[in-house]
Length: 313
Image 1 (cartoon, one colour):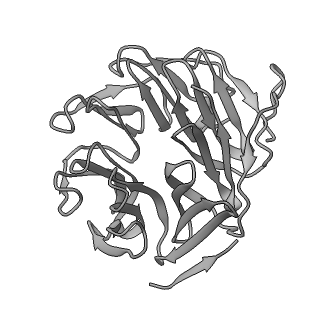
Image 2 (cartoon, one colour; image 1 turned 135 degrees about the vertical axis):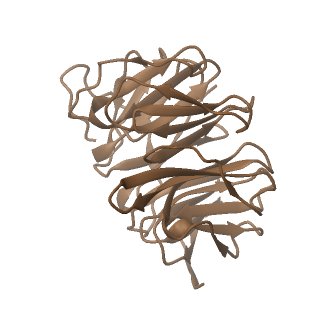
């Protein structure tokens, strides 16, 4: 693979007004659409793009430096284990890109050539999940979910039946959640057993966040639902306009959360998702993923958009 180094909202609503905020843009020359990211600290992370770039982002006293690795396929997300060396990037063609040297080199393994892998996550250094979908002739899309128990060396199909698995959420106590169509798949025991939970929506949840017993699910067409029993039951809240869609959500604790969406939309709640305040992002680009590392929140999106905000716990 060829590697090169580059050195170095408007959200409209009638009530309430747009609030000022402390979101800052990390400047870069990468004018590609970021689909996913994983930051190991507030100065060290990785991003993946629609056109197949794995981007290493490192900050030092002179600013941010970005290293680009070309893969040649659409990429959806990236994840690193706690050891900081082993990482995975996933996307089209069922290809699993893997590094064992902190992103200096990447190898490829194909789980299934017909699959689009949408998300990947690990509970620990051995147990991980990868989810997505594939097209079946005359039957449309079917979801597929894989699990590894040896740190990503081998993977097996979990056999879960769905249309399109989009988002993975894991918790410190070993719970796993997949979003899919009008259901959420939940495992209470690190993927040994699974339960299908119906949620009140006709559209697929795009993002899920769980903190303790509280959780938020959101998606297209103004869909928003919350849970206060650990994800066993979800209640729809009809407070987001149906013309609005939201792509991802991050919970800081059981009450505070951020949600992001098209055209630079950032929303904040401090009551578990029942009320939301729009914040100014400073961009009109679609925002795709939000995550936290240390005391910093990162957001990535289209046209090389990379935002951050420092928070106090």
